[in-house]
Image 1 (cartoon, rainbow, N blue to C red):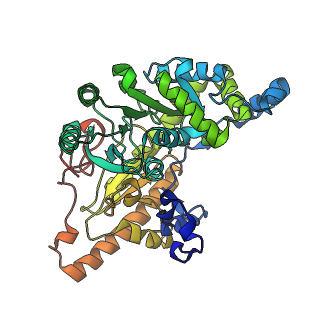
Image 2: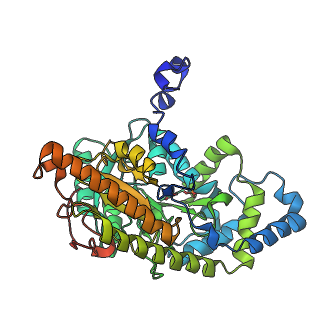
Image 3: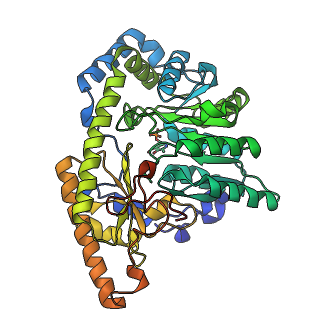
Length: 447
Ligand SMILES: Cc1ncc(COP(=O)(O)O)c(C=O)c1O
């Protein structure tokens, strides 16, 4: 049903009235068909999990703590779990105390609660461009004025953030916070360099700024490298959001927020209004997972698996993609960001891609302002290596066909066909200045 024929339209709150019923959502309904290679959902490969161990500990939770597990709990989440999550954060170099933590229903609820806590309609929030689609959703549901700061191979361009902050000051405004995913960013696949982390922390001090640090991929560096957490640099200025989705399993819907105590207190009240408390059953399962199982070995297994899949995807891209296409080279996480010539609209192309039995997420969803029509995100963590090769082949063939069509329509030298490898932005770079496979080049500018 289209929203403009919706008989309830006049009744909605402003924040709900403008929500678009996405055509892409309808397309995603079919991407799980077995004949389609899906690079769309950011899904961990739970085939790597020891299901017997999870079955056993879940049974133990019900047997040994059944009455607690099936009962309501406190709004902040179980203290025993918070103590464990502090340990998980410590592995990612982010300090916190159990009292600063609030257990949430996934990191997504964390992002939404932080937006609810700080954002009035029209308030400015700054974020990397592109940024996590669920982060965009959380902010737009609170009618934030989301402004993007471009990235390059070393993550957010903090020099451009500085300019944006100065411009806001001139307007007599200030950003409510800066949302950043410093490690193996979703969707860019790049990480913030150490120098820029320090610069960002300095800017936070200078401009009296709050940072929202999203640590979703902090433990998923292929080599086990851990970047300096912003929370270790300016703890009083950082609200940290974490999740067990990428290191354990998204099905347990367990994440957390670590925030300075006054903020944490408000967040607990807001969460109680939304869902009273996190589920005790899943909290106990996660708690037992962290206390009785070799969870760090599981994370290591995920890392090795994703390293192999990333390598497969990058090799396939290198071998198959037309010269006009550029992509990032992640050193962790789950994503590659691809940029195509401007004549191709990746939202419009998705239907054709699905007919060609391959799926991706079009780039526009990762921006709040309509950018990204010439980009797309590929997730390499879920598909098998054979399927990755197959899927990249299908996507390359599709893009070859689109480019041939554009050449026929516009002529071979038309700007619509221009290759993207020499352009600034994350199209041209990989993590840590690595560059694309064909066109390395650190220090690239605005996207
Ligand atoms: C950067 C980032 N933050 C937060 C989340 C939220 O995940 P969840 O709600 O499963 O914890 C995701 C999920 O993909 C993500 O990529």
